[in-house]
Amino acid sequence: MDEPAFPPFHPLDEHNRKLEANVHPPDWQNPTPNGRYNLVVIGAGTAGLVAAAGSAGMGAKVALIERELLGGDCLNVGCVPSKAIIASAHAAAAARDAGRFGVNIPDGVEVDFGAAMERMRQLRADISPHDSAQRFTDLGIDVFLGGGQFTGPNTVEVEGVELQFSKAVIATGARASAPPIEGLDDVDYLTNETIFSLTELPPRLGIVGAGPIGVEMAQTFARFGSEVTLFTGRSGVLPKEDPDAGEIIGSRLKSEGVSILGYGSNLRVSQNEGAGIQCRNRDDDSAGAIEVDKLLIAVGRAPNVGGLGLEEAGVEYDSRTGVKVNDLLQTANKRIYAAGDVCSVYKFTHAADFMARNVIRNALFGGRAKVSELVIPWTTYSSPEVAHVGLTWHELEQRQAEFDVFRIEMESVDRAILEGETDGFVKIHVKKGSDKIVAATIVAKNAGDLISQVSQAMTTGVGLGRIAGTISPYPTQGEAIRKVGDLYSRTRLTPTVAKLFKKWLEWSR
Image 1: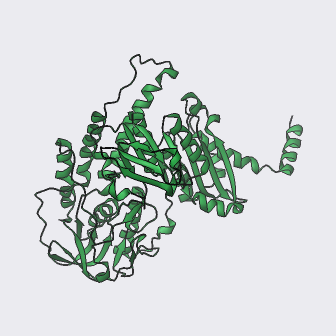
Image 2 (image 1 turned 60 degrees about the vertical axis):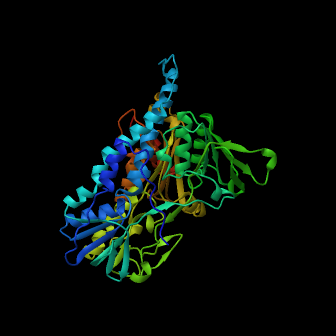
Image 3 (image 1 turned 180 degrees about the horizontal axis):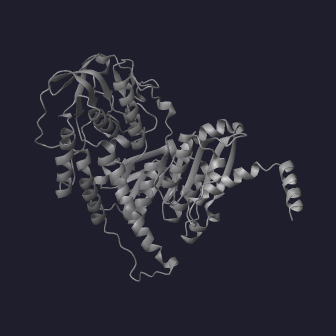
């Protein structure tokens, strides 16, 4: 069964018209195939675009198929629009907080939501030429707009035209998938695919799910002026992260006016006769109903595997977890690979990017690049940010006896103190008895930037001891990582070594 079509551009202003002209031109004419393609790519999100552009750059004959919007979720309904409105929310929060820095704004702060959303649409449209159909055509790629469907082990049909290939890549991504909430089917709710089409600020916004999307949007809309209620599961805020990180973010959200309710699977919703939506705890009617004007479902993703003819191609898949691949990203049909959200637990743009690079090496050059060898960090763009790399928190908990942990609080970092951003920490796990880094969590103002130093160290085999010897400019928040390295170095000073060192100092006077 085909997934639902992408929602139409709204509002259809000059910015969205520009976006549409780039990522799905209404008057686009598909090319006429000419012989077998070295590579056919189905899906033009990050993984598909990287695979297509990289292969064409190597001289391969490439076809790129997209049934909806080039750029995928990241450009259209993900990273780009979300970070644009988060930037506006940061500005509002900074203005409200200016007084503690000695900067007075007498008339207070008023957010023009319509202007903030228009800014987002403009920036998204300005970025879109990079992912446009015309740009990829100019790279020598045959761009086909329409639904691609396998008709055999080495053929794909799009808009009634058959394409033959030597190799293919499935890069169709994933989509929002609502959890089984009582009454949800009868409610007009928002997802990440529709929230960026809002033109008026919801006075009351309910958000289901306290993962990255839920947390980012809860803080953003609260800063815009919405009365936000965040409905979490049993594990609370950011359940996949270090609980200390979730506690810090939860406290910050509450301090900014977000109401956090742990209804979990007990949530029940219903549409009012008017425009509002009622949210109740079905096991505790005494709590009363929480009424919201809009409800955002920010939990659940489903891989786009329907309507692709995967059975005809001999590709195995699961409707919940996606296309099944091996460590080389090959499917059961060794001619066909997959990359990105359609096959990965790491549903991040940068993960899709590097998975696609592996596909190029393996599919076109017979490489053995393994996805398990990729070091993939991730970030939640809240204030403060939460970034992580390496083994997950749950994996670390299950194997905690195997690791040593070193931690520095941001309140001991001078730059964080000077900027009034002391909520947070840097925590690095190393293999017990060594300085080999296996994971790190950073909660800080720019944690997403800071985590790259740890990711690079893990990728290149640099240990925590060598990080201790890396000079950081003073004062910077990056000093926190070096300070964690110092903590490790002090553990190398055993009692015997300390005693000998003390004697040497006495002798050398």
